[in-house]
Length: 107
Image 1 (cartoon, rainbow, N blue to C red):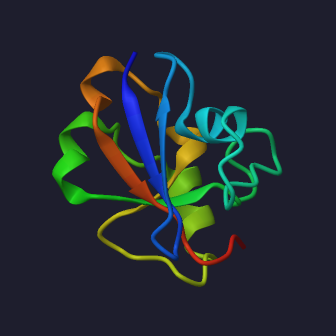
Image 2 (image 1 turned 180 degrees about the horizontal axis):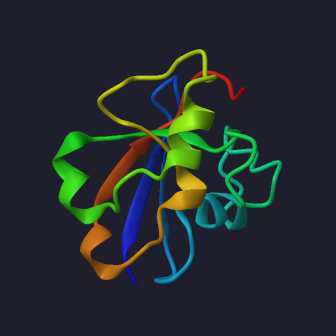
């Protein structure tokens, strides 16, 4: 099982075992990670699962869809180089060791 580390805005770390095939958002919710709301249930319609993914992991991630790009335009703390919606990122073995940072608040 891949291990993912979620880092809250204050630096608190949560190391969890993720299930391949699940989204990063669902993994966070299943492990009670504070700061990931996932209000829309993972259908890319709310941006309450915004995360910052280190650019070193870009090759492990799918390209951003138009819907994801549109939703991220309304996020107040967007970082152009590494903001993503965790509902759009499906866990696989290549993500073992990935760290994702959480914004101070979700939109």
